[in-house]
Length: 119
Image (cartoon, one colour):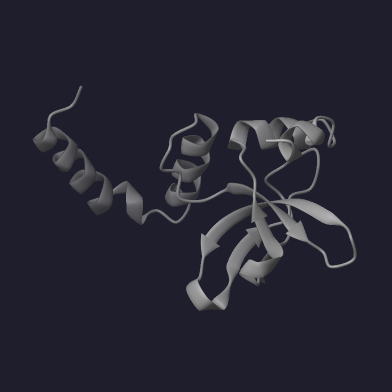
């Protein structure tokens, strides 16, 4: 267990050094989500309503406030490749699933998606 001072020092060092690397936040959020960290800032599993009765499994990357959400539309089986779009919040429904659960469904070409929807 870390002391408050040690945690503060670690956060300061992180912010002043590696946090400035462009890919760092992406990797940190990705790893946090995969290991089930509660405070993963991005890559939140969700469903996108395509408006024609179809829904797509997506990751919410960032909340842009009134501007909508930044969303990754993953390609199966890779899961972390695909187009990134800004979409209205009303078209997104969060899923009660972990990043690991979503990654598994995508890597299996959608097999197991029903379990994600029933949660």
